[in-house]
Structure formats: C-alpha cells, structure tokens
Length: 158
Image: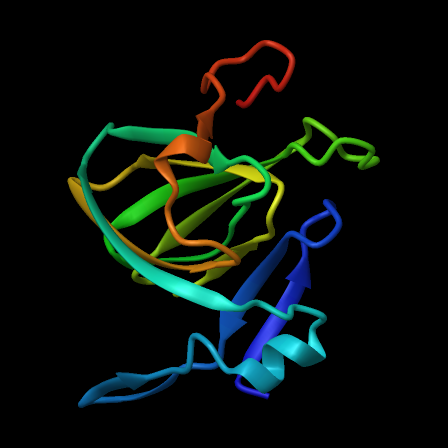
C-alpha cells in the first residue's frame, strides 16, 4: 500500500502519508489510489480538483458547504508550508466543534482527508504556499457556501 492512513483523534478525519520513492533525480509518490482509500474506509466520489496559492500570513477559511451540497476534501501542500485546520461541524458527533491542525508542506508531503461535515482553513507559514485539493461529493455551490469565524470562541483554535 503506497499510502499510510493515520488517525487524528477526530473520527473519519485522517492524516495520509504517501510512500515516497526518491533518488538523485527527484521523487515519485501516489497521492490518491482508490483501492487504498476504500481499504481505509474512504469511499470518496471526487468531482473537482482545486489549486490555491497564498502569500505568507494569509488565512483562508473556515469554509464548508452546507447540505445537500456538502464536500469532502483531500488537501496537499505542493509548495511551501501551511498550518491546515479542520473543524468537526457534524451535529451529533462526539467531537462536534473540535478542531485538528497539522503542518502540511512540500517537504513532509503529508495530506489531510477532511470528510463532509467539516469546516476547513489554512494559514500560510512560508513566503508563499500552493495547495491542491480534491473535492468529493459536490462541486462548488455558491448558494451552499458557508463559513465560521477563524477566531470563534466556542471552537478556540490555537
């Protein structure tokens, strides 16, 4: 299996570590393989790929799409470094309004699987950062686009 799936402490929210094959020429890795995702319990129907670039200090989010247009996201930083955050907004979840944050970078090549029902945000830590993310479930829908304040006192992101 070229991907390792690690728990975060919030159900269904997973860190994904690819196995990197590298030498003096560069590297190769798989960042999505349907069979590995299915083995990890993720049956994501990806419908859209996005690419974002931000300057140092830019904070994006906390964004999500409301039902019936909820989205899952597979987030990967391909240039620079970000602090990526997901907040569980699934009503009835034992981790409702709990957050998880992780540094994603071009060096560590880690990814974060954010299932539907979570808000997503990131802060650019390097001079510039680029992220790509696959979106599952639904394409972008402006009428279902929602956000939560990054400094909401109930969520209390550090």
